[in-house]
Length: 176
Image (tube, rainbow, N blue to C red; front, side):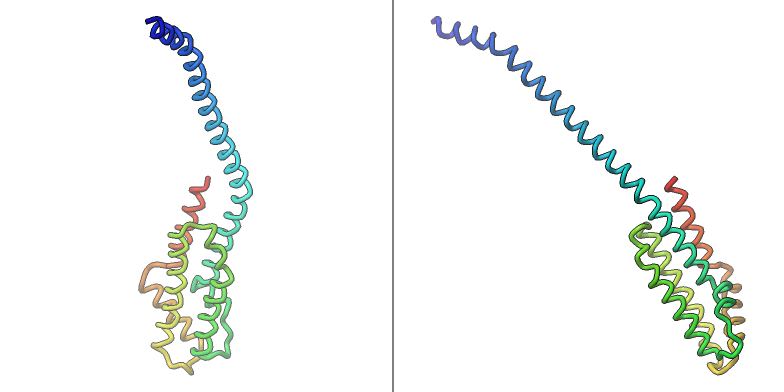
């Protein structure tokens, strides 16, 4: 019967080192997890430091795009006295689409929701131009198209590009 006592004594002597080993293992594991979390956080901060200027530049470019396709700005900047309604319509629509394609890469720096709004705003501007042109004689002077687009905007009482610009500014404000 000494064997059970020997086993019991052995377990009594073995228990403290096992408990110390398990405690040490758990502490070391927790320490390593915390170190890993700190390294991930540090890496994110470094990436954010590098990414923030790129994101701000994307927001700036999209703000410029929205200003350029704003009907009041666009109609003035693209106006040429000798154009017909049809020619002016093609020029305006091409400008809106070309500017959009030029800024396609900016979508990776902004939220998906904002990008969808910007894409919808572009389509809305094209619809306004095409809708106004559809009511006019294609051979009429281009100032008639300008007037029709301005009237359509005034009837709607909202400037889609300005609303989108406000949303863009709100998203930028969230960065800070």
